[in-house]
Image (cartoon, rainbow, N blue to C red):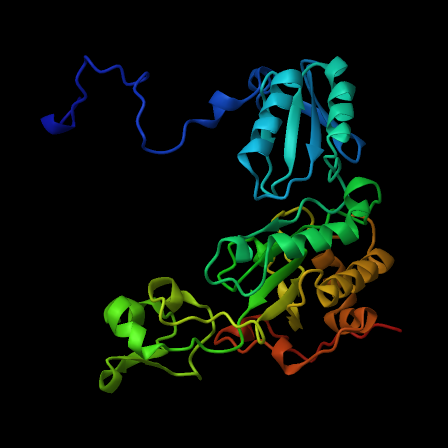
Length: 372
């Protein structure tokens, strides 16, 4: 054991390999289908056979088929058990969730592929999302759970997928399109790196319930919760005050102090950002940029939001070259042309006023003019 202190020695009576603890997740290799484990890192190619079916082929000749379906992300235990039963029946128990919350059933026996697809269709699961299509829409908690949500998540995503379901199941796009939704600007929904992202936004500073504050909130933690130092003590009221010019409407203070509610049914709404991506094929990963600063919350169908997404998607379909992602298409034609072809208004809110935003600005006289 070298010079390690004796307290770091592992007793020989402990079988470290077999020891199980609650520190960290189990190793992913424990959950790989035998075909994948056998051919790990030794794959030859893959083929997309239909919008919801693809096959991976190893150099050894082994194959594994993937059947993808959409999911609403927030799943009941009944649905999860149904997935598990289907996987036991056709996939030897193996299925997985993608980072976009698609459900993929991994089949190593070709004879079970079509029966699996038939049963999924019979159970009304939507099959698709593979290749140049809209994938499952990833989203956050929304009104069903999150205390700081500025818009709903599940309800709005349901409206979006109702509108664009055919681009998941049958129709093709120039390239894959990733749509995501975050119900507030804390953005735990991958909005910053999606082709089209929706962000719930608050437009009013938190309301202060001074009487409740002194009974349920702690002054130091409330002040520390504000990332822009907009909250300061108010000794006269034994409470706090908020500098409206510094507040960025994140709602983080409400997370630690229930006396500072920020949700507002009249002024809360949805912003849209576009052009982000995680992949580094052709161009580097990129952040999304704001194109629509505000749309109203109009449940249950959010017509303004779905109409605007359709404008963006239609312009992308009409103008993008094959294999171009949304952000790559915009960079090629220029942002001026993007606002023109989509019909979206360019307002002062589209101009980034972050301290270091100048690093993203054009700093030369070169302007991209595009013929109409």
